[in-house]
Length: 253
Ligand code: BTN
Image 1 (tube, rainbow, N blue to C red):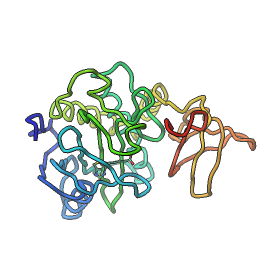
Image 2: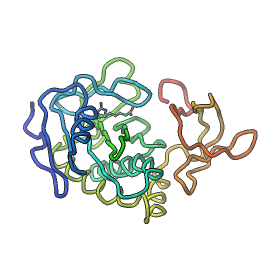
Image 3: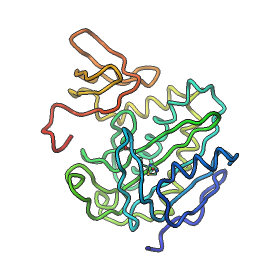
């Protein structure tokens, strides 16, 4: 294990370090159910069964990735909590931009550099808390299987290794600010997401609870929804399981 692993986090966050666990989201949920305060951060040196969206596996290289989860106890009504996903994606993108000029956000919250994924976010809500799980490829040199074609790391794109402890602190400071904007200030948050939205103007294919749909992404609406122009007109996509660019060959989607 290299010596850049986080050992502290900025206030008001508190760090719980785990050597080896299946999933930081599961650990954070357990802590939250037992009353852990908002701002509790669970980080794993080795995450053995990381979960992604849609039940996918999440690969986290113990030497160079960041895999952590934050317990949040938002003051805002629960109806606004889905906005945490946008807040987290933006915070990650902003932290990435301290190392590379521009990060993209693939709605709702994948973070991309140069058309490849560097970070993913999994938000799960409990009765009176939410867990925001973040996986970032920071200094990952190589990726297994098909990931090699669609993933990259911040360090690779920056041309220099990124210190994981410093990066986590930077990211959490930005997340503290952005997660405070899911109620008042949401317009400002949205503008920052729109500036980075890699889907706008592109042809996309989505899987929603109603099935597959295709269209041209026109941007992000006032509630954080994706505006999709289809043959039937503009559809407002609140949630999608899978979002793929359909105007590029399959391997770089
Ligand atoms: C995705 O892009 O599909 C979301 C990936 C989320 C991965 C992170 S790693 C830390 C946290 N613990 C998990 O089991 N998943 C999230």
